[in-house]
Amino acid sequence: MNTKKSVLLACIILAIFSLLLFIIFGENGLADLHLLKIERDNLSKQNAELAKQNLDLYREIVRLKSDPKYLESVARKELGVVGKDELIFKLKDQRKGEN
Image (cartoon, rainbow, N blue to C red):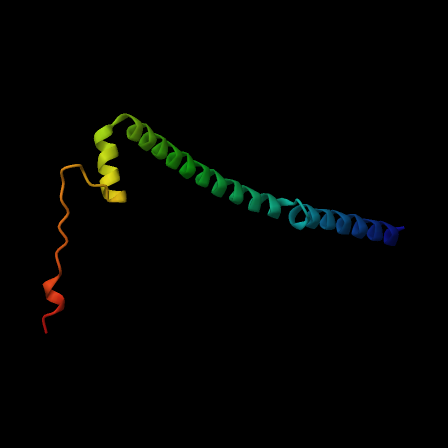
């Protein structure tokens, strides 16, 4: 009877140990849960950064629509737009010819 109890106890311990290993390392176990939490945190940070970028872009759109001077300055800088009575002078760089 003593050997039957020890075999039964060993089987129960083995079953509990196997179940514990499955819970920790199995599919959808604690290890996967930890990785999913890290991924969720990274996605939350990316989401916050994108929300900030969206807000900045929205503010720039509103400013471009409502502020003609800002629109003019952006057009001059990014598109090279010139005013009606303005002249463009292109000067050659004299330093290139010097030895």
